[in-house]
Length: 100
Image (cartoon, rainbow, N blue to C red; front, side, top):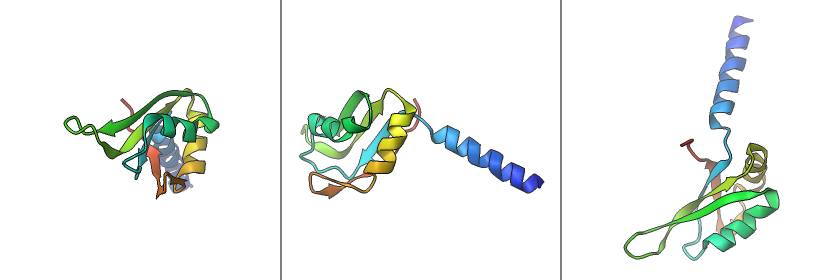
């Protein structure tokens, strides 16, 4: 009984720690830009910010970015529905971004 309660508590802590409204999007095609990324994710909820990370010297995409939603619910829905899906010919990987 005590072990079960501890496991439940631990699971809740892990879920709440990873629960946020900002998603890391990896595996992007190097040609994917912020408008394309926004269009792909806006069907899941209101987006506050979209950022494709680029090399500061060349200006070329590094193949990953971030999408920040107005709610944790929208982010969770996007993660579940978009992880592993094709975007610009590449299977993208999605996870919660670290909290700032």
